[in-house]
Length: 195
Image (cartoon, rainbow, N blue to C red):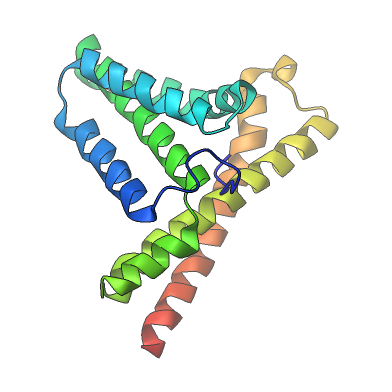
């Protein structure tokens, strides 16, 4: 899902245009306060995702993967603020950010983006984290799918209870995230020491 697809309709477009579009949608996500505009922007980005070659099945997988996070966020937001308008706005922003990132990552070659950022003479501390994030998410997706298959083999399904199911999937993911995050921070630190 987060991997570059060279056969995408948008793969031939200049990386600078895609970066501009990515940043434009990113800023509009946070500057727009009307839910109808956020919903329209979300529909637009999701339609671009479908046009770019992402299958409906993959799009549904993305939404289903976000579902536990969305439910948890909804519960916390409702308990804290008790405003449904704010809750809807936050959920639309979360979905829009993930859709925008998914569109950018699947249609843009990461190495071209890094080269472009280097040509702009940006310091390493600015573009290396971007590179690390874009390299990290496809690995996270693969690891989550492996954990899902392992837990399915062990017989941990939603039928065993939703708490057992979520614990069996998210505890290994969180542990793996912490380990991988530590490795990446050490690598970033060493890269900064070189320069």
